[in-house]
Image (tube, rainbow, N blue to C red; front, top):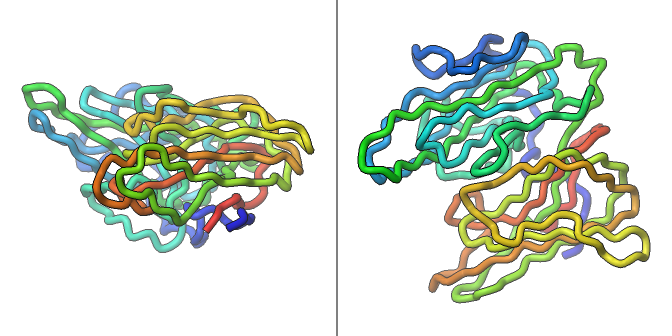
Length: 305
């Protein structure tokens, strides 16, 4: 099926979430993490979770943005031993995420938009000068932690993020995301190199400042190329050895113009005796390439059904 421009699947429902406190938000009565949030910013911090030796958990926590519109201009993760990866999302519409901390093996729901993800790579993301991700009042945040204790003694783990806000939203150039991907595919059983291709022709100018590739456990590589006009495709972004636990956001500085052709390929190695279907669970698969760019005016993407 040919790619078409639609709202990306993370962004299908656009009603704002209900409003909560504007202060730093901790789970339970525990103190803020160090370092503290920057002046005018916000810290979102989990409760302490005790990991037994050899234990692995995915935990999700719910928070809320301030009661006035803000622009995120910088994100920094705060991690302790035992945190394998950390992800921050904003939710849209009638998200079913429980208010209380809970186990979750869903890496991205279709009502979640990625704000920041870190594994073995960078621990922060800075927007270009006077660019920010504008967050509506009271937006629901979801902080997801992949916790893993590879040692032989228990670990008490907390983690969180510090958000730097610019509250003069009317003076900010809006940043946002544009996703390329495929919503429905099956990786056949015992298939060593199955490729999911997606083609997209840009209809806008995008100053891309960060990129977020996304696959699950059996992904092996992800590549994108860009062709200008009738020119030959050139490498745009590639990961040749995909690591499920990393899920990087890589900061770059590239430009896409109207008419530029982006080609995405996700590669999978299914060694199992069962087909692996597209889906939200970490035991399913996804193929997405998300670009953070400015100037942003509305939610859009190239998604194949």
